[in-house]
Structures are given as structure tokens and as C-alpha cells.
Amino acid sequence: MFRCPVCDIPLCMMTYEGVTLRLCPDCRGALVRTDRFEVIQQRRDQPWAPHEAEALRQRIASAKPRPEPLRCPKCLLTMDEGPLRVGEGQIRVDACDRCGLYWFDPGELDLAQILFEKERDSRSDEDLDRIERAVVAQMELGDHLAETARDAEETLLRPPGHYLGDSAGVMRSANLVSRLLLGLLR
Image (cartoon, helix red, strand yellow):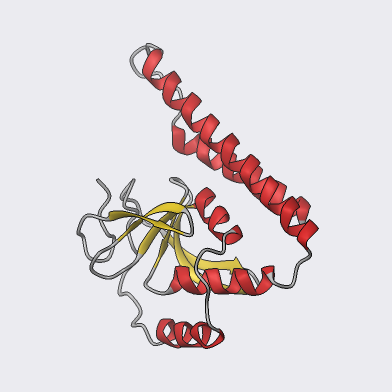
């Protein structure tokens, strides 16, 4: 069970923009798989008023800095905090490249969605269709690779000390493929 890296309580499953993610019921932070975050970018289930982006920016800017880095809810190693390009801007998020996870503090995921939608509104329908097809293909590839890795781990007998790999490595590879695809489409 994943625990909130800020509050240390169990995270709850929820759906955001059609994507399942984990949310802290206390601080409202969100844990999102990197490949699912790319799907969120393409969705527009929740409309945003123009003033909401500025209100979120101010709330995020006024948040107190954390005294120490967060630990990944999956592997418990330190997450890297850094900028994440979203739409026409960027936000600072915590990321675990080993596990393919982003941690969004309260309001950060909503702000990212607003920035994506602002950029999306400036693109042609053909561009949007091409991007959506690439994201869906990447998701299907990532899901297939992860399933294949799980099947291999379950069915193969491993000699003592032999390492076959892990699904996190497969997810990193799928994430790299998706970044390449999205880079080619831009």
C-alpha cells in the first residue's frame, strides 16, 4: 500500500481526467505514473475558469518549502525535485525516475492541467488527433511491456542470485519511447 510522502497516511485511489491515480485524503497531494500523466495532458473532462490558474499559482508560490526531500511511496528512495515542462510553462514536482512516478503537491496537478489546456487550445485539430494517437499507442505499449515483465517474473524459475529485471525498468523504457514519440510529434 502506498503512503503519502508528506503525511505518511495511506493514499486513496481516485479518477482524475479519466486516469486512475492516488490521492492523499489529508494534504490532497497526488501520486501519478509518468505515462498516465501524459494521458491527463490530452484530456479535458473538467473545465477551468481563466482566474483559476492565477489563484493556483499564488497558492503554490505561497506554500512553505519542505525541510527535506520526499521519499518515493513505492521504493522509499529519495525523489528528485525539479521543473516539469507543462504546456507553455513549467512547475516544480517531485519525481522518481526509478519507479516512473510524479508527486504533485496540492494544486500542482490542477495547474499543470490548466497550462496543458491553454497550449492545447492553440493547436489545430489535426495536431491534437496525432498527439492523442501517439499517447494511446505509448500507453498500450507500456501496459503490454509491464504485463510481459510480470508474466516473466511469475513463470520463470530464477537460479539463486540471478537477476531478470524488474517492471520499473520496463516502465522506464516505455516512458523513453513515449518521450521520443511525443518529441517527434512536436
